[in-house]
Length: 439
Ligand code: ASP
Image 1: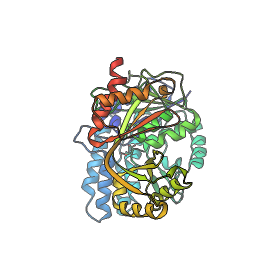
Image 2 (image 1 turned 60 degrees about the vertical axis):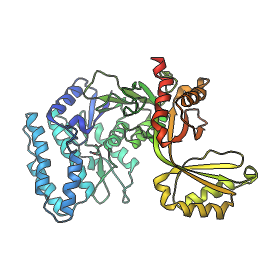
Image 3 (image 1 turned 30 degrees about the vertical axis):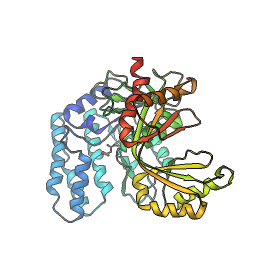
Image 4 (image 1 turned 90 degrees about the vertical axis):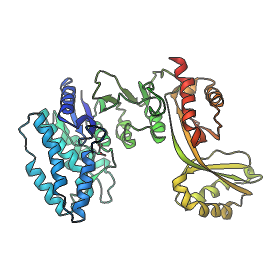
C-alpha cells in the first residue's frame, strides 16, 4: 500500500514544524512519497520563502543588488538545517541559484527553488531519495501541463523507489527551463504523484483540520466537514472556500483516489475526506456554504421573449464578444438575467449593453451592481424535502431580500443572490437553520 503525503508551507516553516512532519511520516510506513512546499510563515508577520524568492529575483531582473535578499533566504534554510542537526550544506546550491539569477533564468525558476531546496532538506532529514521535480513533471512549449508524459515518466521512476521526496509546485519544459503551476500548486504535484503510483490515499497536510461548513471569519468555530464529494468540493471551492488548490482534484479524481485533508498541528484529528461518492450521509442536510461578493446582474426584458428562438444565444453572444464569462442565467417568461463578475464587467459594460441591443433588440436592459452569490451545497438535498423552503424562511427571518435563486438540476446546490451588505447575515442565517439547530 502506498500513501502520498503533501505538506504545506506552514507545516515546514521551521525545524520544529519539520520534526512534527517527520513524526507523522515515520508513524506509518505506507507514507512513502512526500511532497514538500517551500517554508511558509512562522508567524503572522513572517514572509513565505516563495514570496522572498519572487522579490529577490525581481531585484536581479532589474539589475539591482539582490545578494542580501538571497542571503536572508539562505538563512531560513540554515536555521532549519541547524535545528534538525543535519550534516548538510546548501552553499553550492545557493551559488548556482545566484549565478542563475544573474543570468535571468526566469521568475518560475526563482520561485521553484523554494520547494527544490526544501525537498533536499526533507530528503536528508528522512533519509529518503530526492527526486528533482524537473525530471518527472513536464509542461509543453506553451507551458501547458503534459499529463500523459508526466504520468509515464513519473510512474516508471517511482516504481524503482521505495521512499522518495519530490518537491511540489514545479516541473520542466522541453527546453529544460523550469515552469511552475499557479500559486499553491504543490497540491497539484501531490495529486499527480498519487495518480502515478496508484496511491491508496493522497494525504494533504496543512494547518487546519480539513474543511469547515462555513467561513470561520463569518461563523465563529464552525463545524468541520467529515466527508465531501469531489463535486461538492468543486462547487464550494469555486465559490471561495480555499484549502486545496482547485486543480488538485483532477488527477486523483480520475483514479478514484480519496484526498484526506489533515492538520500537521493536530495529527489526531481525522480531517476531511474528499471522495468520488459515498453512502455516508453528511451530519446535516447541507455539506457546506460558501459565497463571493462583487457580482452584477444584467436584466434583459423583451415581450414574448420565450417564443423567440435564439434570443438567449444572441444575448450571451454579446458577453462572449467582450470576453466576459457569465456565472448564472436565471430566466422568466419575458426576462433573462445574466450574472457576471463586477470587476470584469465594469470597463466593458456599455460595449456589452449596446451589443445586446444590436443583436437581440430587447425592450429594456437593467443593471444592478454590488450583489453577492451564496452556494448552499449538499448531496443530502436530493433526498430531503423542504431544503429550499428552510433556506428562504431563514433568510426572511434575517431580513435578507433574495435577489436570485438558482437550483442546479443535480440538486447538489442552491445558489442565492443577495445584496453585498446582506452577505454575512445570509450565511449566518443559513448556517443557523441547518447546523446550529441540530447540534
Ligand atoms: N510555495 C508555493 C506558493 O507559495 C506553492 C505551494 O506552496 O503550494 O504558492
